[in-house]
Length: 513
Ligand code: KIV
Ligand code: ZN
Figure 1: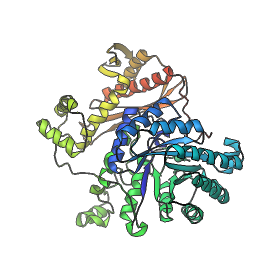
Figure 2 (figure 1 turned 180 degrees about the horizontal axis):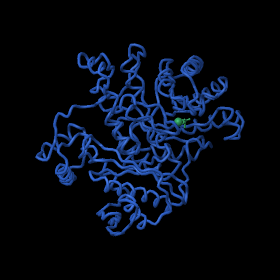
Figure 3 (figure 1 turned 180 degrees about the vertical axis):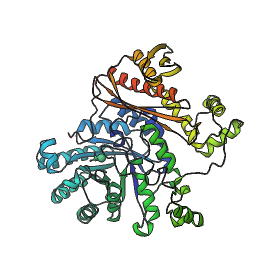
Figure 4 (figure 1 turned 90 degrees about the vertical axis):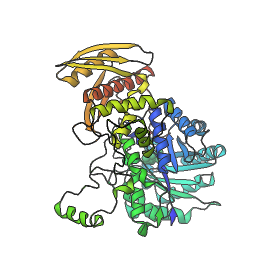
């Protein structure tokens, strides 16, 4: 059985989802969870894009022990040098260099000839390889590239030192047979004095990203790229958890396995959902809330007799646990720490009294504390502390609100607002503190768990009218109004950060050289 390497780009391509911005602390937390999940290599960011992206890659490089860390660079020497610098402290550093090779990208975006593209590949891959042993090369828009030129581009990269060749279906255009043929053609024709590993990187514009990735694996790819929950540009990337579970369930067909600890799948999916502010669709394969629900009587009857009648994946396989240690208001510190151990949650021992106190406060309000509540307790705290702003207090009186915010220098801001309803009044009050030009694009509340006493995640999407950038921000709290205030405060902090740094030039990985 071949072992397929799993390359996760949730922190790079995933962060290119409109509105999604992970803070550096969130990125490090996600990276550690990806390592626990068994991901082989994490694309931690695009260091040339912004100082924050550089810093995130640096911190992730220091934090990970087993999982390799790579950084993206355009075929530009300064990009590559930034990427190299950012992964320098990783235990297993890699560099990912890309340039477009399709006629439309070369002509209209890069405005250079195919020969110049080949020369650039040679120069840049060589430069990267001189500094970091493991280099991946991607011919962007590979699936719309003429096969003869694709072969030339890939051979040039291999001759210059690349060991991994990624074949991006940048615009989600390919089909299963066509993509498989590209891999076969490259595997059969590329000449090298060492093993070259090929990988798919699929976008989901036609809803075929996962299927196309699996077709590439079937055709001989040894690595696969994707994101958790399929987040990413436009319709997103291939969902890594779906590929991993497909390989597991259909090992008879694929004869290949993933390195993932599948029992960590649900925790990983929930973490990404919380931090990205993008809810997991209820009907999503593998991790959706309905993936294991059986509605029709015939199905229920079958499942009760034998779960395998209608269930090809067991909930336990992906880490949906029966709550073996239910917690409630009478649970003590010991039961609480046991639960943290059971959930594999790492925390600083100094933080324990504070965490326990927050747990007790929640237990006073909520009859049964579920595993999701415990996860939310942690997520909520990370979310609350964004850039040091804390919501000290919020009070509602009809359509009037009073909010009290505290910044990292312990300065208190008290503000009042009046609106058409409680949430509007809170937002008006927060607007007065920050005084930004912004437009609320969407506001949503979703319960963390079932039940009337559930904690809620609030997500707001705002547009910074000064720059046009869209930000998603979240708040998690037992009290929906407090959660809404936290989310809106966090959105304002993101806008403030952008405004104070000047318009952060968010170079997209698709901007060319
Ligand atoms: O989709 C794409 O082409 C990419 C490349 C940068 C690898 O994300
Ligand atoms: Zn991509």
